[in-house]
Image (cartoon, helix red, strand yellow):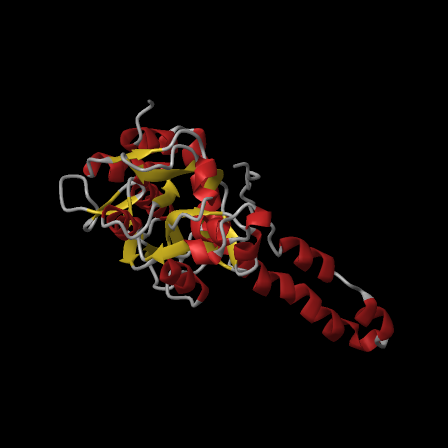
Length: 294
């Protein structure tokens, strides 16, 4: 099936221009008596000195000196629970290493808060985390409640089926099959949509807290297929003999990080660091470490 690729938006506007547009008015001085002019002009002269530092790229985080990342660490190879060499406080993956590098560039200590995917999005909106990095893709409805960064990686959603399945291509998913997805993801949103809009209908989609549970449900015969991103799909198939990925791409998307709506200063700082890492090859090197060309 075909779906339009969504592009991430890089929100880089600041309030500096607004300050410039609002400042410097001489109306109070011209309207005041001559002997009162110095008093009337003083506020206009003092305002830039008081306000400029707050708009000069300054940002705050939930906890001073820390960068809190909410995620769902059941999404290999982007975020996984791990305790081996190279793991960061019990986690590893593409998003984890990108977050570590971002925190280093900003001089902050990274704190990773692991939860289900829906909760990771809500944590940012409620001010409990500074950013969400969780294999997150841009959507217009999400953009109404969060601000998105530049895209740092492309995500391809695919379909996993058992080797003995009668589902031989993606068109067969429309034949009254039960499809498993990870709750809160674009996979759930797209698959649950009506057939007229390219989905399969809510009655044919079951959402699970993470991809591993969806795959286990398929192995137990509770559902017929799982729709999930290619990276995790490759990992689940490798770990579970008897499964394979259907040929083709179900959906192609771009991954971004996101902050709370209106948190422009922090987004600008993260975007600047992220774009530097993309330009100097750091991000691609991290991706290549976990995803090898096939």
